[in-house]
Length: 411
Image 1 (tube, rainbow, N blue to C red):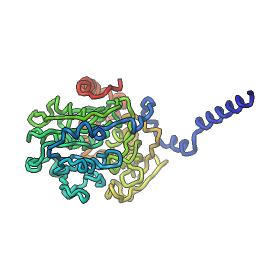
Image 2 (tube, helix red, strand yellow):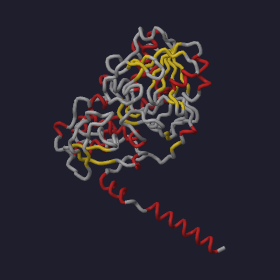
Image 3 (cartoon, helix red, strand yellow):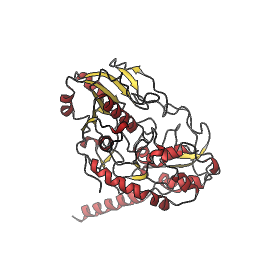
Image 4 (cartoon, rainbow, N blue to C red):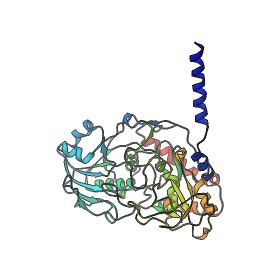
């Protein structure tokens, strides 16, 4: 009896020793990275436990019967291992055309790249781009359509353009008396709300609504807010139907089964994206043109030299910032996956830049949604001081947000 107990005790002590001892890689990374803002640890909800709107075919197929359907979809529009378009074609749904957002129908185009109209080789359906000059479905394109079905995975950041595409789809539907059916999906950063609320003077395709950088809504909830707040042109509202996600709350952590765009390849990139996308308005690279986009950041003008990378031309980032130039900065690790929105990276790079006069470009205020953030950084304000300036608008937004929640909140 004593020997089994002794073996059990030795096993427990060995396990504890392994957990507490940092690997060489972790020790090296800790020396390179600034401490990230951390969220309370919460286990990721298994993908199988969640039923997306698209998974619930028996709920929405009757609604599509005898309807002419336009699909607003991309590579994330999956039911298991099969694309939603292929599934609905097999179910004899009358799909008349496909609308594709930024990055295209199959999701392999560069950010900001021109997306051409085409024909889907598998189904023969026409594909129309909703990126570039034609951001909104035209009345002509909608002549043979009754329902616009939107099923695209969002990542919960204001400047991610799929929600801007959804806005224009709703606007076209309102103008042409069509119905919008949204098959909702979880928000992988939907467990908190943070960042400055957009000032509508800075409205653009990377920020269409007076919402914070991390808005804490699914696309279905945001669509309800757009309708409810009458943010469509002419204060119109569209005929909106949402198929909610099952087994999801805003406390859930959700790991995306398909990467939502070429440069957000994994959970780490998605979780830190709201914080470091602001670098797209500076002379700092976020790792486009590397194997780890949105997981590294660096600049030829950064004073610290502990970590470096060199952006190259690769699929999905054919002409990245600082192409073929050595960039100094740091690499994020899995410990940052639970991180929340933070200005720490931005403040550090500005304070340690050898080229502060050219640190910001014209895109920064568009991404930030205001002019104040750039001015505050240049004035040497701390993150605490900057955050205090967000509070009135952020508090008002949080109160409004509660009106449109379809799922239990994180509070």
